[in-house]
Structures are given as C-alpha cells and as structure tokens.
Image (cartoon, rainbow, N blue to C red; front, side, top):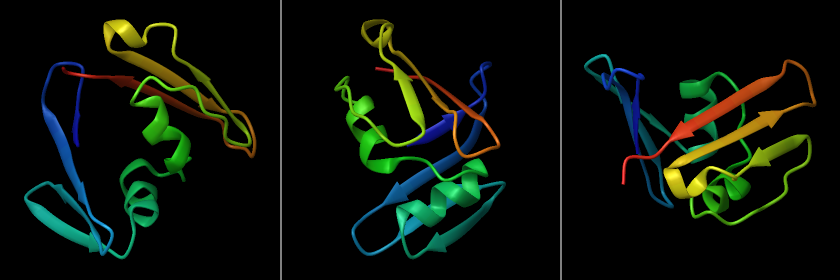
Length: 97
C-alpha cells in the first residue's frame, strides 16, 4: 500500500505478511511484528484493521467507535471517523485503481 499526498508525492509504502510488516518512508525501512503496530507508527492512531480491509473492498463493516462512509466508493473514495475514544480520527482514502 502506498500513502501519498493529494499532489501525488509518496509519503510511505506499507508491506505486510502474516509474519511481519514493513514501513518504508524517508529512505528508511522499519520492521514491525504486526500490521497493527505498523499502522499505529505510520498513522499515529490505531486503525480498525479488520473493518478497514473490508472497507477497501467496498464492503460495509462495523468497528466499535468508528463510523464509515462508503457512498463514494465507486469513485474511489472512502471516509471513516473514529468518534470514540478521543482524540477523534478522520481517515480519508482515495484509491488509485
């Protein structure tokens, strides 16, 4: 997975398997024991990974404290918000298909 700015500049690349997860950013690669720990390091917040992987397929899924919006999925956009616990997190994804 590649994380980019709205101008298309690559911020980071994420790779994962069942054994480990890697974050490549700023010319360095960091390895984590799990995707959960990688996303916490990359995003600064724990993400609902099971639900997120469903959302990326366009499948509605619930996760405690999170609210997803897949109305624009067909145009490659998805939005989700963590309402609880604080602090609030806004996740906006634009998919390049």
